[in-house]
Image (tube, rainbow over all chains, first blue to last red; front, side, top):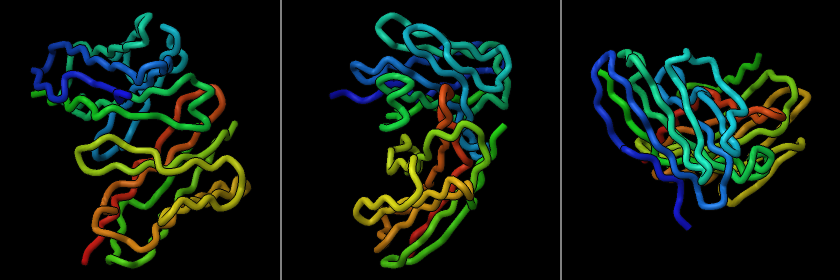
Length: 116
Length: 109
C-alpha cells in the first residue's frame, strides 16, 4: 500500500510570504500529526488531526495553522514566514489516536522549507 | 510538562555493541517509542515499550523502566548502515508523541 505522501518535497520562500504544505496519509489512516524538525530542536509537535478535528496543538505561534479534509488528507499553512521557519516539516499518520500507542506513526519523507 | 533527554552524538565501530540511553519525565505515560532516521529520510519505527523489561527484535533491543523514567536502545553487531539518528519518543494518553532531540550514531570501519 502507498505510504504517507507529502508535497512538495522542497520549497523556497521569501520572508513575509505564506506557504501551504500537503499530506496524504496511508489509506485507511484517519489521524495525521505534523512536526517541525530542525538540527537544534529535533522534532517539535505542531498539531494533530483526527476526523477533521484538531485534537492537540503544540507551542507554535498562530501563524502556523492546519486542517484536515473528509478524505483524511491534511494541509498545514504558515503565514508571514520568518527565517527561523526554515525546517523539515514531517507529517505522520496512524489509524486513529488510540492506535498510535501500539503501532506508532508512519512518517512521510517531509517537505524541506527554506525561507530566504 | 515533560522532558526527554538522550545523548547528542555517539560513535562506535563495526561489529560492536552500542547502547543509546533515554531518560524522560512525564505524567500520564503511555509507552515509549524508538525511531531510526537516516539523513534526508523519514523516521522509521523501531520499537515500542509500554511495560518494564526488554523487547528484542533481531539485532535491536529496547528496554524500559517506568519507575526510573529510563529506556535504552541496544544495537548489536553494528553495521555501517546503522549510522543514523535514533529518536526516543514518549506517548501520553490523549496527546501526540513527544520526541527527544535524537542521538546521531556514527559507525566506522
